[in-house]
Image (cartoon, rainbow, N blue to C red):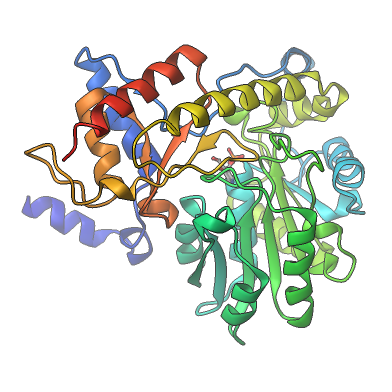
Amino acid sequence: MSVMVETANLLADRINNLEESATLAMSKKSRELAAQGHKVINLSIGEPDFKTPKHICEAAKQAIDNGFHAYTPVAGIPELRKVIAEKFKRDNNIDWKPENVIVSTGAKHSLANALAVMVNPGDEVIIFAPYWVSYSEMVKLAEGTSVILEGAFDNDFKVTPEQLEAAITDRTKVVMYASPNNPTGSVYSEAELRAIAAVIEKHENVFVLADEIYEYINFREEGHFSIGSIPAIKERVITVNGMAKGFAMTGWRIGFIGAAKWIVDGIDKLQGQVTSGTNSIAQRASVVAWDDMTAPETMKRAYLVRRDLVIGLLKEIEGFKVNVPEGAFYAFPDVSYYFGKTDGEVTINNSDDLSMWLLEKVFVATVGGGSFGAPNCIRISTAASDEALKEAVARIKSAVETLK
Ligand SMILES: Cc1ncc(COP(=O)(O)O)c(C=O)c1O
């Protein structure tokens, strides 16, 4: 024991101060229980259960066979930066040139890069909650201070312009959010983002980090709206996106940013010293991704069917408060009705307790809301088969309804 304490002390403070990823912790526990022979249904991961579209895989094979094996430019291969600039124009109405685009090792890397180049020690970063687990930890790594703004359940977990206005100080450097959102599935409408942008416009030293990784999994009829398309603040918006979710390419590790050239140049400088250009084969494969959007469309329809299935079933559970996600592939019910209740041995004090109890009791892995800044809720991934989802929710229902 004393050896462990001593080695932990040898690690830098910046690592000792980081939280472990809650989602990865639940996956680890699920694997352990499965290895013991339990029939675990793992709904704790944020990963499409589809395969990468064929035309993208073919392009990767060709890149290997054609010997595309060398280092690439730090910011990405020119043909990929060009295709991404065209995508920003076509899909997002953001007029960026290839020089405004930089490719990185997943959107996670893009987000961490953006914070690293924008945030000085002590700068405040406003994060809209519930938020993706890594945001607050990335801000810590950049030595910034997170200011968490909670979106109310009754406002579909969305932050209002009034809340934002009240939270901005002269230390505020960045405002960051994801839409569609992980973990809530909420999507900010064009009108809501225009109102947020009107606040940002008044504060000329404040930047926006818009995480649009779930862009293609958006069920709203009006479709996706990018805050970066608003001319008054365009130069101050860093738009992050990537291949992982829409194209079912989590393992390929391609993320990208569209931003003002001086920001892209800053990231290029950082990346040049830390990772260099990302994987050459994955970049080549990504160039052809947008040539055929059939698969992302098909996947989106499947996620919508599952959303309706899971939300319908969750609404039947006594005490669960359920919002209707308009995007992504998560359900995020408020389970606070069960706080203070017990099975005779374990008392449930928060959603992290409930999530762990469900895993141990009925072998369904979810993620407690604590690390998303929402301790009343649990996250349930709907990226699983209909049968698995039905069985999982039935197990959750029968378990929680025994709590007294
Ligand atoms: C909101 C959000 N942003 C970014 C990412 C990271 O995506 P990538 O796999 O491209 O790093 C995720 C992945 O779960 C996410 O949910």
